[in-house]
Image (cartoon, rainbow, N blue to C red; front, side, top):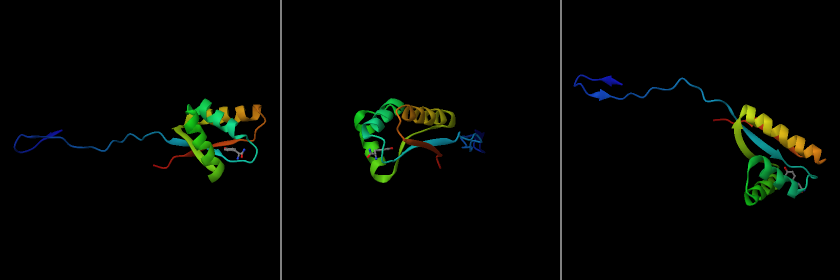
Length: 104
Ligand code: TYC
């Protein structure tokens, strides 16, 4: 805030020096073996998606090769990737789940 010659208050914008924390996209990758209904279950369980949304994302991954499940700060993204991969391996599925820094 500043005051000009006519005693008017001027609000000045100042660029913040604070840097936002990096965010990470979590992606599912397609494979030929993981059952479609298992992928839908993963999206509902670990990414809180409705069955309809989970089915849409699963088909996107199936047809395009990959798809974004969500965007999270680093520590949450790492935990989710680990949880998804562990769950898939427990069920003997080769599902791949990776994280990638979000460009802003
Ligand atoms: N392609 C798999 C199938 O036909 C389904 C699938 C979808 C697998 C998404 C992985 O991330 C995936 N059973």
